[in-house]
Picture 1 (cartoon, helix red, strand yellow):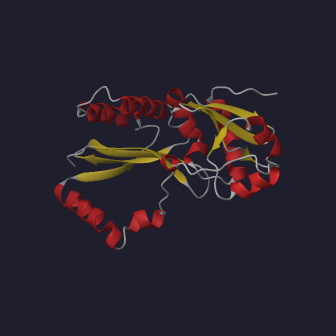
Picture 2: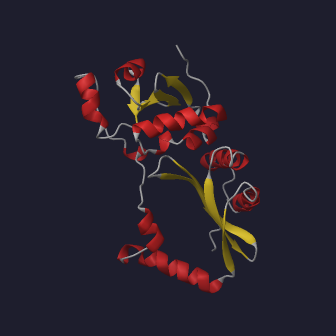
Length: 233
């Protein structure tokens, strides 16, 4: 039987195929997410039949992601049934209950919820809800000599220089969460092409002042991993 192991770039294609079969949209199913944050969360993965299994360690012990793949969920869930399972959606609950009656207790974990935005809302910023954002953008466009660029493997290294300048503004240099994020972001920058990432940067007078990086979980959802901007702008 396969064993849980540290993810490598060689695992990218089969993991993404299993996630595509499942239709899951949570950020825990982004291979890029798993790969760049691995030093922080020590996530291990397994190719089990036609399923992708993942395991992370927390204060509560080992937690396993809801198996992603195709076919019956019985065997992959039996593989992890002694532990808690995260990433379970409302659609999963009746399926699990039918396979394992009265075996599981389901609880919402609010801190683990994803925020999902419609692309049309962010493109158009229509309505009262986005009034303040429209004002911020208008002021920025009037004030600065700015330009937008797609992030590519050829220019992504420029984001590293901007990241270092951004960190210099952080008064709490020992912030553990920010140190973990910086480590993950550097891994993403160094493997931007291999992870099929995408993103954009904004420059003022030729210097990066903001950038964002993401990858596609499936044909419907992009997972935004990093967003950085100088706060005075």
